[in-house]
Structures are given as structure tokens and as C-alpha cells.
Length: 223
Image 1: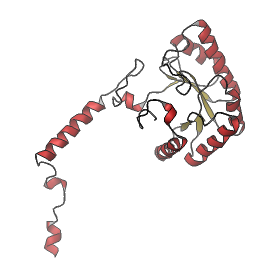
Image 2 (image 1 turned 60 degrees about the vertical axis):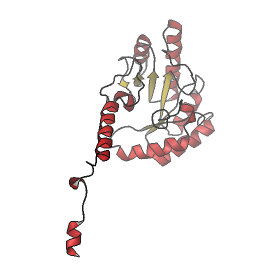
Image 3 (image 1 turned 180 degrees about the horizontal axis):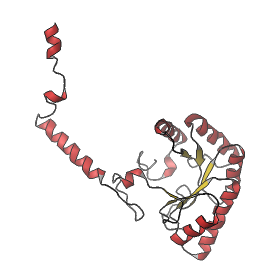
Image 4 (image 1 turned 30 degrees about the vertical axis):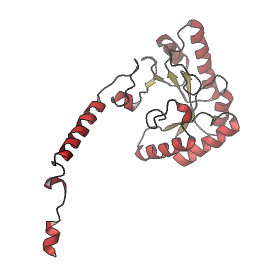
């Protein structure tokens, strides 16, 4: 949302108010899907702050859960939220709020073991699911097999229980295509062609024509 909709360089600039307004809009279109709202950086720095902001999100957006990124030290915050009847989704691997470098995580035995331990602690804290972002294939497979809760992968191989792709990346709108993104269509090119055609029609006086507007002749006859 921060990068795609607001054009920010990273996710740090997005505000809680932005997230809430966006989630309210999304909720209007939800029929049966699970709506999980990502908590921005700084909104869960301690348990009291996390509870206050998570409750606000749940109340205003009517969402089903919140997601918080792991900094390897906020397991008690997850536990506290869950104990307060706020469902939490975890997030490990590349965590944009806490890591600057976009790279594959868990690509050594030691790093894989650390990620597994992190995932287990998030599960033990009460999270109902966990996102694995940019986690190596073997590590994703290991973590998924060891956990009792579902794993949702983004750039983390087929060895997860579910998958995420940013819609604008998938549809060819964003211009951001790392290796893990499959571009199913190039809507950017299609939209550009349509806009150019519209612009040309306007300049040449072809739009609007009689088919595209009411000329008012019937109204004048009545008068």
C-alpha cells in the first residue's frame, strides 16, 4: 500500500489513519475473504500501544485480524493481543519495517534454524498464521512442515500453504518485477494504449460524438 498506492520509497511513511481508511474501503468489497490489516511501524512498539491501535483497527475497519512483523523480540506482544481476543498473523523473513536490504532469508543451516525457532515462537504466542517473505525454498519447506498453523508465502517457493502477490505486480502495473513475481498480463501497456487513443480522439474532435452525449434536442422540442 505504501509503495503501490502512495508512492513512498518504503513502508515506514504510511500512517495508521491511511491503513484504516484503506481497510474500510476494502471491507466494503469483501464477501467471504479473510481481511487482515497490516499494522504500520511504531503502532505496536509495546503491548499497551499495540492493544490500543489493534483495537482501533478492529473496531473501525471490522477486519478479521491484524498482522505484525517479527523483530525477533515482540512475541509477547503477539501473545498479549491474542489474549485480548485480537487474532494475529505473524510475518518473518524479509520484514520491510525492520530490514533495509531486500534479500533471501534462511539460506544457510544456521539462518534456517533461527527462522524456524522464530516461527515456532510466533506460533506458541498464539498467531493463527504466518507470512514467510523471501525465505529460501528448503527453509520454507522445513518451517511449513514443522508448524501447525498455515504459512503464506511471498517469494518463498511453492512449499507454503498459501501464496501472496501484490496485485499491481501480478497485473503488470507497478514496474517492479523481482524474480518471484509472475506477471500474468501487462495492463500498463494496455492502459497506455487506451489513454493515447482517447487523447487522439479528443484532439481530432472525434470524442465525444452524438453517441456519447445527450444533445438536448428532445428537451428543446418540449419547450
